[in-house]
Length: 417
Image (tube, rainbow, N blue to C red; front, side):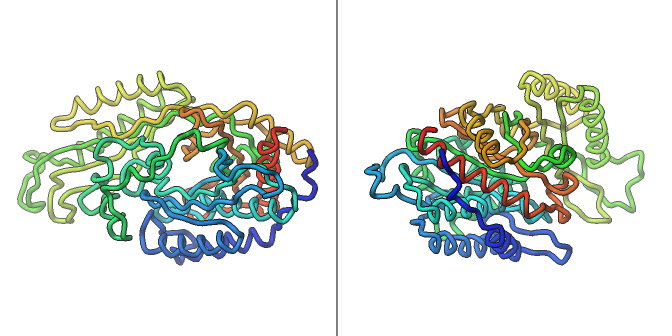
């Protein structure tokens, strides 16, 4: 297959990424753009206009997923209702996160679509660009949009939140004019998708250490998430003797260090993180009466996660008035072998070095393989392997190389070559 006519424009890609980074920008160079926040909504409106300028028909579903569609070229005789090749990622960011996590996937997807259109090569199948809602889990469990698209939400998840000060997805949807009761209208059949591709920064140091611009993802780790609730007794911090206190934060601290020790002991193929902690009532002169923490465990082996979760349950159970609450379990997935081969062939034809690897981070691409949708992921390096922080950065030549491979691979899949 000759893809030489498909030419990605690095300067156009760079401008899109830098323009998008202005929405929710912080003085330190990071982003505050949680899903469906004001900054996120401004970014979404801007991106929808960019999609329209690129010739895509744009709509938004009941879960606030943005869907841009490019119909097949008329001369191919292909049906506009044929299964599509979808490219997707997210526009929301973690608190004080970086400019390229998720953003590279949607801006790169848009540039790939533009390069394909401008090449003049007939497009034999529909192509969709998906901006998927709340991948980062600002409201509850993460990958909300892709799971809502396939009716995979947890029971009553839409009405739950991470804490009393945090909005539920239902409230956020109402705020932007949607009816949470109609969330099932976002559901689609897996048969509508011929393939799903996601491009992303690696979020780790492997590719940079190897000097390789493109990673071909072989699989994504299992992810299990939990709340840890610890109850104590609130009281006056100046009048309650230390020996008579039931300090929830002190008990939580014991859990944190014990869980960390258990994860280290479990071996190099599993990681566990308590990354979020809320203390109640949260005043400097009140003994903490309650603590809620989030725990996330990741491994390619589901059995390893189950074993570690049992160890955590034992730790939590040994602390008075503490309990472990499962939030979400996402099974590990493997990418489609044919798509991996197509990505590698595209790299070979462009003379672009590549490396096959596992993703230790979760992505919307996890949602599609269990449903039978052939799925692939392309990584590019991030500077020093840093991500989820203001220092997150990329090299523009790597971004352009990755988008070029993405565009070539889409057409290779479209033409079954």
